[in-house]
Amino acid sequence: MIYLDNAATTFPKPIAVTKEVNTALTKYAANPGRSGHVMAMKAGQMIYDCRIAVSKLFNVKNEENVIFTMNCTHSINTVLKGYLKEGDHVVISCLEHNSVVRPLKAMEDKGITFTEVKVYENDNNQTLDSFRKAINRNTRLIACIHASNVWGIRLPIERIAALAHEYGIKTMVDAAQSAGITPIDFENSKIDFLCMPGHKGLYGPMGTGILIIRHPDDLTTPLMQGGTGSSSISTEHPQFVPDKFESGTANLPGISGLLRGVEFVSRKTPERIFAHELKLMQSLHRGLSKNDRVKLYTSYPDRKHCVPLISFNVDGKDSEAVARYLNDRYFIAVRAGLHCSPLAHLYMETQDSGAVRVSPSVFTTENEIQRLIYAVNKIS
Image 1 (cartoon, helix red, strand yellow):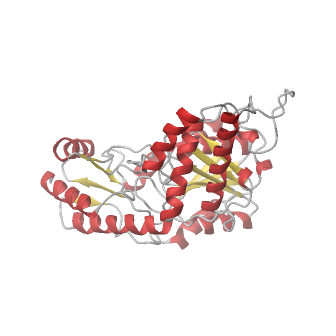
Image 2 (cartoon, helix red, strand yellow; image 1 turned 45 degrees about the vertical axis):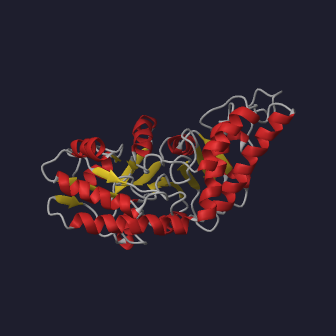
């Protein structure tokens, strides 16, 4: 199988990740923070080690501000529902995933409004101006994707965060398609809330996510409340981090595997991972652009304006039929259809057709990309 659906979840995982998940289940699968015996202490240490590793990778000053969640959607909902109140206005981009759009739509009943602004491919100045023009006196948050999960278009998040702070506004960044692939310096950016999955660019297991918070007191109400293993005599939920946002038993096997994934990315470095994947997508773009029946929606991928991800369609062919053909005839796994991002499809007018998405990983080879080009040419 040639696996090119890494924007959904990376595969394969590094060997150290699968080994650590198994070790966690067989050697120290006790409840961290609930007991004082050896296994529970080992479990607690592993989770702390992961918090430290994430802090180093993203340059987070206080590791306690690294919160473990179930996925990126969980992180996003924690921010939106813990920060916004009646009358607040939010600015989002026209490329947002449903993990941002759907919670905001649901919150309209509570008097929360949002404005969608246009993103300009390869023109960060115009994109920034779009955000500036949408800000009003009720704007309290800019919530934007770092890079589109459909088109790979990257937003200038550091500049957007700086703009927001000029107006006293907080910024939440959805880094589902960038964390581990592009360098993100949390401490030196002005990002207030950084949300990411553990199972994509960080090469951890599914069911893991991360939320990094600059000022924990900004989120007045946690998404969940309950047992934390701390302040157990009290019926009031703890207000200190990370306990405030980590109710219930932690996903110990998942976080242990995530630790090894973060270590893997740290050794490789996001800079080198990005360079490898970008080279592959440049090769794919060159190859597909030679076929008149293949429609490419974005320009030749470069270092500044995109993440390594390309979507396309074949004239006269349904995107899902193309994906099935690639799977059945050439054992190539890609994503097709509508990718949980209706705004992004409206942006390129592919809401009816969907698109075929190709997303590599650090393990993808040039030969695999050439095999894909050959297969698409056969289809068309």
